[in-house]
Image 1 (tube, rainbow, N blue to C red):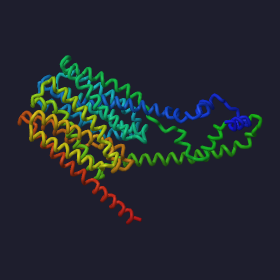
Image 2 (cartoon, helix red, strand yellow):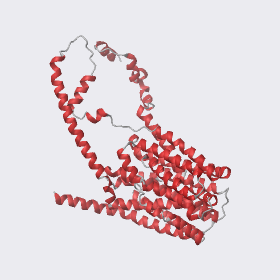
Image 3 (cartoon, rainbow, N blue to C red):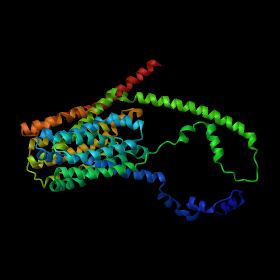
Image 4 (cartoon, one colour):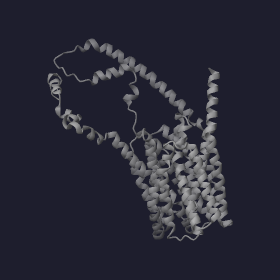
Length: 500
């Protein structure tokens, strides 16, 4: 400490000891400096925490409300005097529009600031659900809820993994899993709320209050901060400009020495001019590269491995939307009263949250590969549905539905990260946003199937047989993907060797 004081005293540089004390805790607090540093949070850490909190609330509200489709579906049958085919179509269409908007949202995310797109999606969602308050027929609900809310839902949520990647480069999986679990939290909280709203204010009043809840996500989206690359970092790639900037920012401690600026101004200006010319060449090359990447952005849809992954994730979305829509109707068919059905929804939310928070550790720890884990989840869904069909009791339906939701939670977590292993980094933005794109054309079969099996055949068993076949096929696809990917990679390496 004495040596440090002597070194400071002999220096000609003026020292601000207040700044030195605050910037160097060890000088003041000695051995406890490491403990104090552990509790320091930088401005970027605070911004990342705010971004995570905003994404948590935004994704939770916008994803939790569509999961209440089973209650809204049953209420729509009596409110608009329609059959199950017509009543289920708006709620099925919402997920179809959301997944179908993936390529558009992914492209917009590459062209514009994701914050603008997210805010636009929250506004469109709130306005669309608010319009449902004035609806007097199921067609209006189809347009507002299915198309308007569906597209706003996609705009607001499909870019959330990209937003999180700006703040959490080292803990991306943890932040994504925590954000996705917010859907279960909001679903758990909103289930009894919507049940009370339907009894008190009917379906139209429930739409009005739901739109007010969604309106809060506009504020959450506006509070998101997207880090942008500063202009100085983007244009100062050449050493001449960097050195000139350092010369300008360097403080002059010795004020007695005069410098003849006329003798050095010409070389410095010429160096800066050369740096600017090189910079313009670099920026033009960057623009050309960006144009090429935009033109090749959709080439990922020609990748057969990506198509198989899309089939698998679209099958998960197909199963998820059907089970979300019919779970209350199936429960009532087996003797569940209106007062008891809310407990089924809350149980689904709890088990879904447990699955999303726990099943991800299996793949993170390396016990199973992501494709093997996905195959086991699809197999578990098939076994649970077979158990329900074979037993057919109230206990069987509760157990099977809970296990289906548990395995779907595992697929949701893995489905957001499995593409990083099989898709090039330059295509990952559009690949993630479009991972359930094939669900859109297949979803138009859901409403006719629900109406046919329940209204015509008086049973959902046939619909569950179709889901079992879909899940078994997806299980086989996930088991084949690693082998097919190795063959594809070996073929590319042989082609490169032949060209060289």
